[in-house]
Image (tube, rainbow, N blue to C red; front, side, top):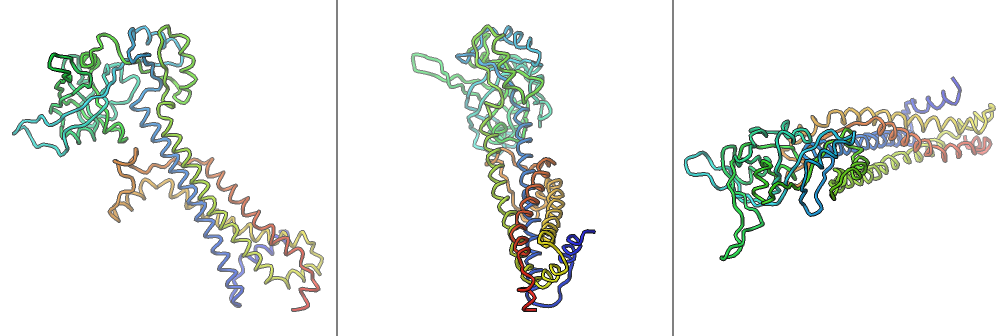
Length: 429
């Protein structure tokens, strides 16, 4: 073993039992290890949670929205069958489904006395209503796996049934089998004035995606019923497309545009929900920067630890120099000591951070039950659970960055130790 490594290990492992200065050096060294461990663990956990939010947000959005939407220039697509057939000629497009979409008011206080308990809620809500074809809709979205009550196939032309988001059904105070009144904003002009179009629908299902935006503001009806409600005839709002690679949707949308002979807008899911992902990405970067400062502060505590260690070991340094040790060897001894302090803290931080990141979906609910709190309210946040997606690339980046920072912190004390003059140091021994 090189003597620089041997002496550096000895300084780290030595149990100093005498002297207030030595005990204080050991205390500062322990604080440096703990600070690096906490900083690294916090970085790993926070980045894993942010990655989990991105992944969960992406999966939930793609479950209810389409990869690409072909929307008519004036909100109406005349010959949607031809548009769908042209889009399907692009090899990356897997499925197509028409839809009609508009904003309505829903009134759920239609239950007669004696027909069961009335659910709590104000009974009136604004919502987006989407007319779909249940058979083709299943090819572009994932409603079936998120149905809480009822089935999407219950939507039939002329039956006037409606499927609600779970929070919307709760706010309206209705359950499956109840009726809701749909009020369309475009009214009918009569001699007495403009009268809004009103139609009663039977609740045939409830879905729950876990995203408050959709669970509280989206309702589904049959495509034909929506065309009657909004007086669109045979036209639709647009066509929803599913592609083989959702992350390549912008490029696929650009390749679809030339094959369409009807003017239309092509909107991919990343543009439609760009604000969500941009906000998560900015928060991820800022959290990394803030928590990196914790690691930096802990790493620079090593500077004070080694400076005091150099002052305490001036006699040892002088003896080593008189025995023939070079200045580089002396500097290497204290670099080894600082690097070992950093490695121990780094190892503890990585182990603790990885363990917590892998079990955070168990730990956080336990804390919430213990203290009777809920960190992410469904009414405030799009995702009410705390997901985690540990990515080993992030762990590697954090580990390398923290270790390099630790090595940089050892440079000044090591160079100071190398400049110790043996005669000056031994004069006071």
